[in-house]
Image (cartoon, rainbow, N blue to C red; front, side, top):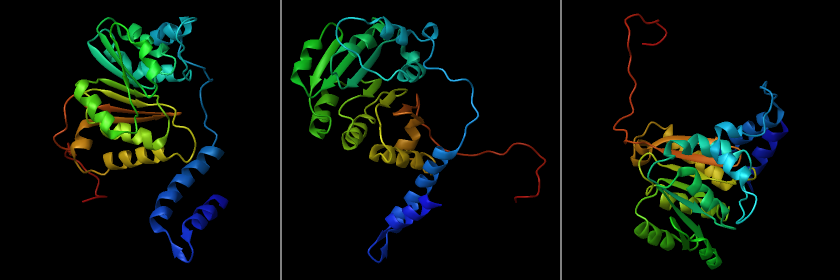
Length: 259
């Protein structure tokens, strides 16, 4: 129980208890302790999804020359799981963080000729990666004024990938500005959420807590699901907004445990 003693010590400031910090920290630390100690009985390990069922991974593996692409290999399973429904459709994808530009063309090749790609980077030199169907916008993802301009110039975004500065506050601002702008049925994916504790991951825990709160707001009515993967968060929007959250009872015979 040393982890619990450390949490309690960290929740005391002088002679006063920081009760909100204590309430938030104890379950988080308990979960981390379980994750470090537990043995999960699992199937034999695999490195990545086989290329014969993941054309995006096949595109990456075949890319040997030209503009660079740098991705964690397990991301391709995640990408294909959440993006495959858009393949061959009229889809508008935005990626924050261009770096060496190779992923912009990879997305276009994966989704097909009806794909429109928007790349965002703070480096002006990234304009060189503009081409037919690929637009580059230069700006700071932590600048809400910049995002206002983006939303005015790009009225439709179906998929947004945040592979930008990887700073939690930048990731939060980008999500707050662009998640409401995302099309119904759209997918928001944030990459490279490293470190524990991570401030952005804690922020996402707050989103999950609200989804489970039972309160119906514009947010909970329009968010279909939230997924956590190693280093990745995915939010999927509903095709149609929920109008209620309700439970129903069907049947005629009930145990007397609850009235």
